[in-house]
Length: 253
Image (cartoon, rainbow, N blue to C red; front, side):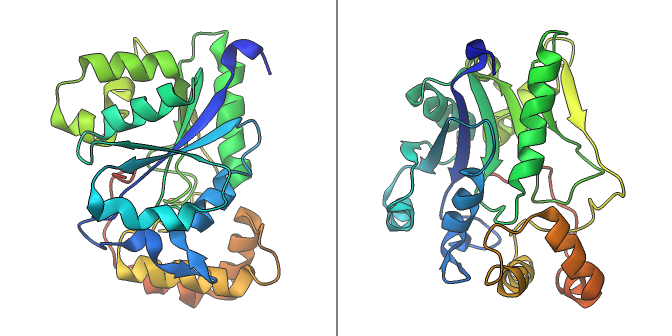
């Protein structure tokens, strides 16, 4: 990898006060907190040099800290509501040149898919690409969402964004301005975007738990292909959260 792109820093934003499922990041999956399972997978993303947890500040969120013990991650605290500023602070603390953004409620994220987004970003940069991500509405399941962008773009967004939606969701300032931040979008076929592999509700958590119980004991590094094979054999699992309405393309962190 060209050294100009390094360090590549994965920022995983997290908090305890999710409105739909408070404390979800500490719910157990195969014997460990959800946030820890997510980070184990993020740490395996090829091309990532450092991982930073962007944890909301305040005593309500301190309970997350023990779940991070022993993991090779940095921890940066910041505003609960201004997630853009919190993410930028995490990137600065790690001296990022390139930022990979993942949210902590994605314990089934596939490191290989995320690495492909990094590769797409790097391959397109010479042609002006400044932002890359998994597709918004098609392709990979909800919960595989990965964004990759210049740290410079993140800092520009932090300085200029005034819309509360852009402060809360981090990257809309970037992807709303495609002329300034040309994008590469990684799609996939068959379209499995309707699969909810993000944990936003109790029923989402039930599905994630079922997947971990089925796959983790045999292979802690299970990936997308293993999940697809499981659902082919057990299509009933997907009914656990099929009634949950579609969500925004990324978690709030």
